[in-house]
Length: 310
Image: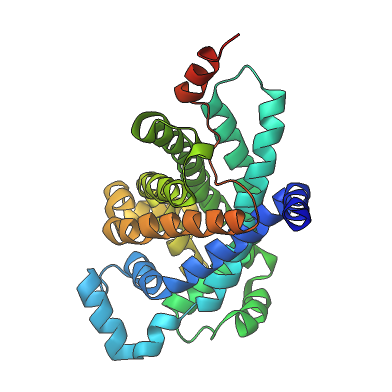
């Protein structure tokens, strides 16, 4: 009994820290797991003539670089997206409370958008240097082996600008993605409890709650990937070519290709990855004695309040 009470008090006191650690572990490990697919995606984006499809890209990379080619950029994926995940999930939870208290009469979607956008701005500042190294390592095998030799080499050739010249396109990719992702997740969780299960979250088993997390996570990831695909192509092209400007990259890729290039593989990547991130994130929260994610304001709860005897 005392141990259970201690765990609850510890979880409540360090709630946002637990969310940050959960975000770091869930994002870092899932992005690490999909490194081979990310190598395919980046090469298809920066050299679409040579890597015209998923099948030809796979065979070309395997022939020229062997199996090790599909491990390129793993350290940038793990550490970069781990840091981003810590800021994205941890700050979102904190800012959601701040904005909810400050904007009590505002639409919930606005609060979700503001919380996720503010958190993502900071998260991308942390991610950007790792992303710059990762893209070069994946698309230019002779540039560096990883973060250890990549950071000093990029700094020597381009200075601090080299690490952050892709920041604006990165914001362009991840801000709409994060805003759509968190809002879709929150509304999906609310819908599933209100319309599908027709029960309060606390009345559902942990397995049911995590099932809701997975369904909402997949909907959020798939929707966000479509919205942010144009900026993803721009980020990859800018980080691969140190002389290109944003205007030149957009002109070279073309408007239609911005939306369609590498979209199928990106949907294959992002939907399952975001689902797994939410599942790991909520599993860590549950193991720490915290509730699963999703700010629920359901008709079920309202109805239960009404039928209680006076």
